[in-house]
Image (cartoon, rainbow, N blue to C red):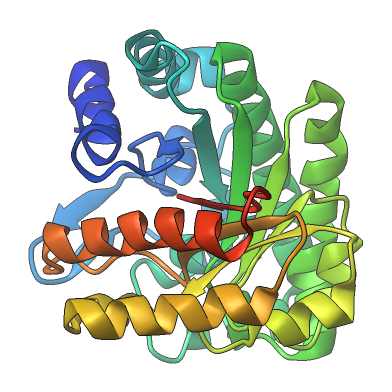
Length: 310
């Protein structure tokens, strides 16, 4: 589906047409970048994405190539162009990428992991190779996001799903530095940049000072506390527990209202889940959430609509 622009566009548009969210996110996958760099990617039922030949040493790394997004990832850019046309300015379109660290974790582990022992073994025993790889991946991500912007996306998001598995010092060295590099290259394109680093409670101020315009929060953080901590450096995105959408409609509304009240008045809140939606959630539950946030935002802020939902 990712490689077929018509299908990717159709899936991207469905939440707008059926649920009524305030922004569209192009349907794709973070692993399109390592695949474009030359890694063979397979999807295994029950396991998920698998790289049969992961990167473990310099010999493996030599097989990676520098990407040209307009050629190697043209199918994503075509999906963006088609989706922008179909949206016809109804809502903005967001493009995204995994962070260099998160992509490296998959490229070295070969698949999802509970311990991430192989990628940690790499950064501790061969940090030079790790930094070389992260630098290459950062260049690829920056080029990819810039190409998406040129194709028409209105904002871009960097997902550091596995940032929280690193210690504070390691996060700054092996993740944040490369996120900053990407942002510095993308910011000249004059679209908002969103950064989401799951589980990274300890570097909120540094993330807020990374150059990003929006800071995504997972559901384990109190959005009001984070707002007081980072001030008005960035807007905040989040952060309902995705599993809350298994609850009844009144419970969903109750928890959403707590988040709105915790953030308080003022600009700069994109209401969202604190991570991706779970696959077996009932669409009606999500629709209940979206409608409630829109209604409550208007009533809570009277004539000052400060919250959007995506």
